[in-house]
Figure (tube, protein in one colour):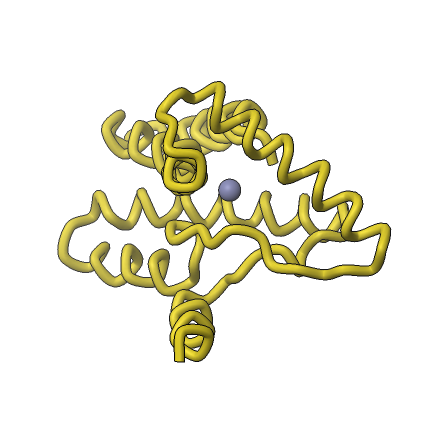
Length: 149
Ligand SMILES: [Zn+2]
């Protein structure tokens, strides 16, 4: 899902929370929004890693090419995993959830990221591309290891 839609849905989520829990600290609302939006930083990092270029436009171009490649592959019945995105893994988000017991700020980051991930999930299901994502860090690490051996 495009970052602009995540930004927009993040604003809507934060506004709704603010309406229902008006006494919530502004910092927590900022954390929820930041997490719901900036979680996609992992996509940017992978684009830099793959293309060795730092520009944000370059990252968008990279994912646009990937998207077109993916559409062709799906048409030919090829169901390949896409790039690995660490912030989008269940393990990373569970870790944030656990850290939330130590500092409440992590809990709000967790809320934002889970919200983002749910939207991604719905979007991927809708577009028939759920196979592209690796949801588990340990799966990814295990497959990498067996590939190298
Ligand atoms: Zn995402």
